[in-house]
Length: 233
Ligand code: URA
Image (cartoon, rainbow, N blue to C red; front, side):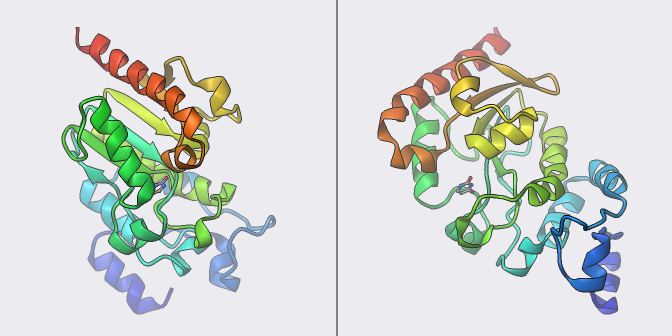
């Protein structure tokens, strides 16, 4: 990063900007021998951010290579005091262009899934992704990208304090539950993320290709709805 840009970030109150050591030297992120500089300090710094700081940090993040190909960082959308938090994987092309999660085909299905349990985007619902920047060609997130981005989601969860998290697809589920278990083995019961009930289901993009599993997703949504109801009774 050039000095003037760093100065601008400072003026915006979003400094310090943490980087992997090798970026400054080579611009190459994700090497197995990349030494992580102050990773825990960076996480601790993110954990102290308020909403504005967090949004700016996400929009200007350069912690992994994805910033080079993304159009913009995608923070999340909805009610910042929502009881429902929906977590997906990463922005796709439409989300990268519009700056909002789940606005493409998968988003249409997600909206229909939410409507089926009486929810609407933005009304007591917040939608976020594990990755805030689009992986090129919609490839799977790389482990170092998840590691770099997860603190943003963790801070969003702290700020929102949702009553229930609905995790969509392998990357959201495995990142939040810190497991490598398959969705098929995790769904059908209520998990906990730091004391918050978490329900697992298939990603809408997967459901668009695997129609028979929509019935299972419907069961998962019912479990989420019942769990929320039980929290309020
Ligand atoms: N898939 C996701 O996981 N998130 C989006 O925002 C869009 C598609």
